[in-house]
Amino acid sequence: MGVSRRLGGDRSALLRHDDSERVDRARSLSYLTFVAPLDIITLPDRKLRLVSDPIERIDDDLRRFADQMLETMYDAPGIGLAAIQVGVPRRMIVLDVAQREDEAAERDPMVMINPEILTRSDELAVREEGCLSIPEYYAEVERPATLRVRFLDRAGKPQEIDAGGVLATCIQHEIDHLDGKLFIDYLSKLKRDMVIRKFTKQAKLAPKPASL
Image 1 (tube, rainbow, N blue to C red):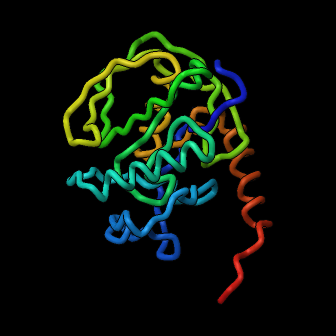
Image 2: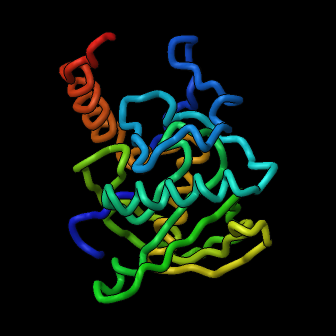
């Protein structure tokens, strides 16, 4: 999740990707092939619409990859990042909202493996959101104000926590990524289509990498 400018609809279809944009899920498990900071994929990359697979094994390679994700998130800068945002379709997110809530606070990174929201409050809250995969675009999104989430920590131990405020928003935003959803899916179709057109145009105008 990107850092928005202040503290404070329809859903797109899941990806039906063609061979040219297919993610090699087996290759993506080779976490050590990555060097931080990692490249963050951005709209209109259709990999953002993939539904990520559960993580079955937690080992040192995965923990190193989590550290690389955190370094990438801090470098961006952002307060949350999902594995799919760096091209790995696995159910892991990293977060750190400590300095969002108190600029003088120490970093307090969290790693959530196979996160699952157990309960959401009926009470809703509106908060401005941004996304590292949709850079420099912000919009207000309404979500449940509090929630309870279950996950495995980086040691593989089951955890459950209650979250509210910025943390609740960030958790929901990042778990959405694992299900192929973006925060713009909560906007009106008109606004969402405008954002997609803008980033599609930018991608077409971007210089192509030189061939070797």
